[in-house]
Image 1 (cartoon, one colour):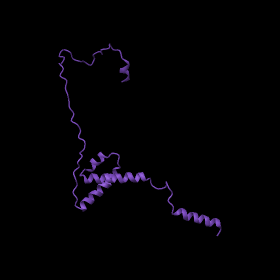
Image 2 (cartoon, one colour):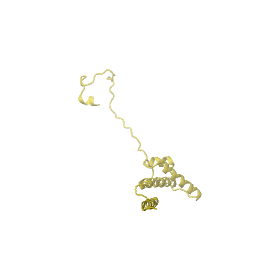
Image 3 (cartoon, helix red, strand yellow):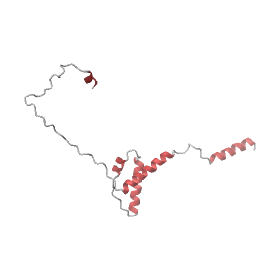
Image 4 (cartoon, one colour):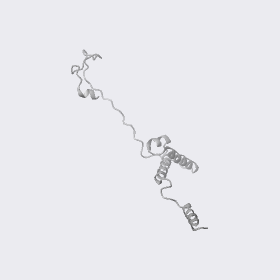
Length: 130
């Protein structure tokens, strides 16, 4: 065999088992998937529904969250583990309060659709911007 052929074979053999940096999957993607699965598992353990879990963790991958939720559900059923109620609740929407002004009603003056504006029909620069 020629030395050139031996060199090519040796190089091919060395590169065949080599992991070239940057050619594999991005580790950040794998980390995000693992985090999303952990979020799903934590939601199931906290007795939260999957829809609530999605709503509370909008940035997490829904498929990975569901996988984690499903895995934890199966684990809890197999080992007869009861979930724990969440100690921190979902932020409740504040009650909207309507305050009515108690101004005396103008009985004699009724607004009509063809009433003129107060500025005499002139348009101002501010009204053109709107």
